[in-house]
Length: 146
Image (tube, rainbow, N blue to C red; front, side, top):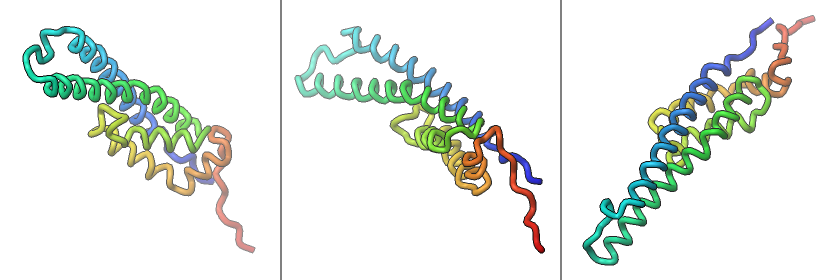
């Protein structure tokens, strides 16, 4: 009899990455909004184009932080599904979201962890683990030759 495939390690690493994403995303949102609210931080003097460029850049950064904060709970949800073997699609989605730069403040950490989780999820025994219901998984026995 075989053993349950180890999906716990990459899933826990995905959760840690998501928690870092949430913390940095929320911190970035708060500080970015505070910076936009303070007129002393913006370009007081300058052309209209310079002011437009400043606010466009600041808004883009805020959107990136917002995306990171929004996707963090989704990554955690998918990682929990990965541990339980409950939903292959959610586990795969969480792995991809951790790997995409625009949805992750911690891209340098999330990319290798997301790729690792995708490699683990592509193994046939892991797919079978999800197909058989995860926690109720009973690995197949050795082949019987007659």
